[in-house]
Image (cartoon, rainbow, N blue to C red; front, side, top):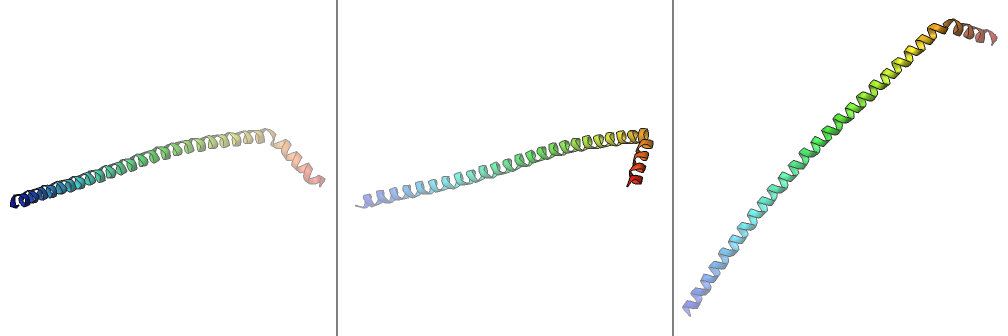
Length: 103
């Protein structure tokens, strides 16, 4: 009878060790999973920040190019209006004067 009790105690001790080892393994796997999740989150955040920076840079570049085109176009238009005025200011003045007098 005593040997049976001893065997049961050994089995219980072995089962406790197995359960403890399984619990330790589970904790280790949980920690590893948390580390992988944290690394994934950090990598994703870094990649997102990089993409945002690329998009922002591209947007600024495009905006600057568009502004330059508009400035150049406006300068060209003003230049052509100045040239037209210089060539036709006498005629324009006469037309304006006649329109004022007629009214």
